[in-house]
Image (tube, rainbow, N blue to C red):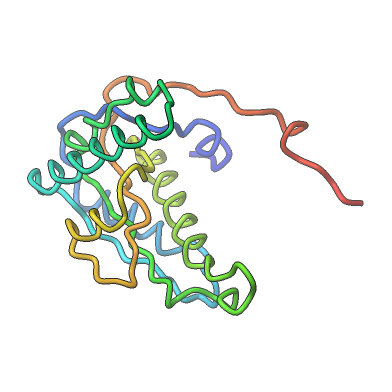
Length: 190
């Protein structure tokens, strides 16, 4: 698959078939993640592979609780229609855990200490593109309380469960979402 086609055609998947993800396929996706760039090559990520249904149910319950809390707090009506059941049906959820102690030299700069998060984001993007290239759907999910998910996954502070990546065979075609034109998002300093 052409890289630019993969970037352009990859979409978030919220409906999965129950087919398990073959171990070799999952290994290829995780291997793509570790080739992401990171400050000082610190590789500040760890991955927790979740296939246990009870763990998925606990994650779902936390996400549902947080969705309702955010709907009430924000007033965003769309959150009343947003469903997180895919957390229970995704064959695999990969928790991406970041280590703030492995950030780069940015830790010494004002507002710094975010390099580890950026590196983990690059790893997540690599995972999503690899999953798409291998014929699978994926979703980058962050609607949860960090502390609660950390407890569910037994993540020891100061490490942080930055995202959950749902992976599996898509049920149907994911929704095609528009993108803003470059003219609205780009400016040049010449």
